Amino acid sequence: MLKDKHILLCVSGGIAVYKAVALTSKLTQAGALVKVIMSESAQKFVNPLSFQALSGHDVFTDTFDEKDSSVIAHIDLADWADLVIVAPATANVIGKMANGIADDMLTTTLLATEAPIWVAPAMNVNMYNHSAVKRNLHRLCEDGVKFIEPSEGFLACGYVGKGRLEEPEKIVEHLNDFFQEGKPTPLEGKKVLVTAGPTRESIDPVRYFTNHSTGKMGFSLAKQAAKMGAHVTLITGPTTLDEPQGINIVKVETADEMFHAVMERFHQMDIVVKAAAVADYKPKQTYTHKMKKSNDELVISFERTKDILLELGRNKQHQILVGFAAESEQLETYAMRKLKKKNLDMIVGNNILLEGAGFQGDTNIVEVFTSQGKVRSLPMMNKSRVAEVILQEITTLMMGV
Ligand code: CTP
Image (tube, rainbow, N blue to C red; front, side, top):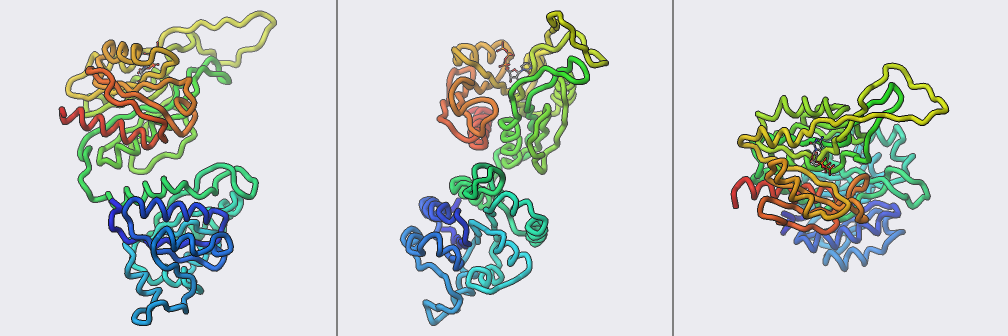
């Protein structure tokens, strides 16, 4: 989607400038034409020559340095751009943008352009959380600026937290998706139900029985299905993830609650993806009052919960039914067994013992099976990309290709 697109990259001064160099390279590799403006402080981190070499264009640094006398550089650049991205965007440049200040080449061009503007902030976590910065971000949001949120991790200042410039590959993905909007959406009009997260089975008002699922895989699937045009319902167990926009979210706690929430909606759905790690057992008895300790051994009896997917498989009519199989051995054998037993159209298997796969992390390593056997074996990918591939496979299956 980025082929021949005119991308104006505005680089402001922070340690993340080095990532903007990589971003220039990734954008040009994707076929975009990239021109770069650097603020004065950005040039203290990286020499403009690096951007010049990778973009194949002069780098603009000074409003009064007119390289071509037939045009006014900041107006010419502003008009040339199909999209402007400020990366890294410092607290300072965000403040200037929010207040319409134009005191250098970069901010003057930002005021002059009518192209969509994207901002990828990068700064210290305390700066990012400062009320003044939040106010400015909010104002920019109201002005229609789009954001690529910083990720969490080790910051150059030694802090750990939100403020790290998103990885160049991810930024390219966001811009790619932006240009893709308005293009045919393969799941347009389809109703998709995704389940996510763990379930929580109470023992008493204090204690519960659960598993390591974070809900990331299910949330990524829900977001990706919505991007592909589907009406998405996400039934989720307890997670700490931000609620995605434009998705109907139903929060449940126990396997029983998830069972009812799913069964109620099943007949209206075209596709059901069961990414939730549903507890197979629940305590036989839930105590109303906190259990008091004693010197004896504690024995808790568990009973089986309902297997939601098995029940869906039994009641399946026109729906495409997709399950997950988290295994620690014999992935193919167990995944194929579950596919048949639960009457599924597809099952996504992962070996939870592999580094970079399974619960907690942002990545997964999966294999996709249908009744034909293994159809895809994917390398380690971030969960949003895994979600994209799974949904592409579901689309292929629906079309009967
Ligand atoms: N699943 C479900 N209801 C349950 C248990 C599992 O709907 N009570 C679904 C999961 O959402 C997943 C699939 O079944 O899509 C496989 O889950 P998994 O726990 O791997 O398999 P089980 O069938 O529970 O078998 P086992 O635990 O013996 O591996």
